[in-house]
Image (cartoon, protein in one colour):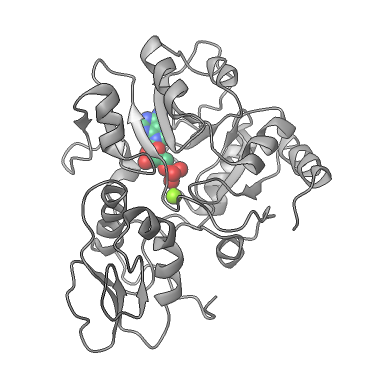
Length: 317
Ligand code: AMP
Ligand code: MG
């Protein structure tokens, strides 16, 4: 579907009527629905097969729209001014009378909110005239979509095609609901940049004390097993490279973590095919977007309850 004003207007009308529309953001493609409509939000959970205890991120088109939904204190306002629009999600107290569906926030008294840095996403939110809940547009637990074709392969949804996503990993999730800011998920805004602004952050990615349930289980997983920090592939494995050296595909031959993030999910999908026994991944440094990449890869490699969780796609892109 090509994107013109009439298309955005029509997609906004569908959203306002409670339908779901998948759309591009700078991070990954989202499956959007009216965040104030319980039925639309329930349909998102159902389409993804996502457990309803895992809350959704609410997307807005303007800072003022956020203020109708959550309590924005001076610290949050400063971060919004600095990082929005962009891949930073803030967890803030639900505002009394907030119209956001309780199902979207899994009944918590906080709401995760973000203003995406993508013209189509913002135009669509404006056209819908309401905030949009929009988790990644894939089946829960699988590899996130960074191109419209990935959405088509995973879900039967109307998709606005905005080409490949610029950042390629999900937003950084920062919890501002407590006294001390806490990193809930590394993502598109590097931790170093946030810490320059806020000082050292609490890290609540602790396996023994998850703050939000989506944090820890096997996730982002292709059908094939994933092996990390590989120097060489074992027989039958596809090697996903980083930096110089022979590899089936290379996240970034020059060793650039931002380029690697943008390629990560598309390359995992491309290698997830019969003929390989697994995907071996070269070591990725932990700095900048490397933290988010390694977070996703560790979950992709985590033990699965019923391996393999997903069948590899029948056709490669
Ligand atoms: P996804 O929609 O798959 O990108 O995931 C959204 C992430 O934000 C998940 O890790 C959720 O658990 C987290 N999240 C969403 N809302 C909240 C909230 N109110 N409090 C804490 N974490 C949240
Ligand atoms: Mg997701």
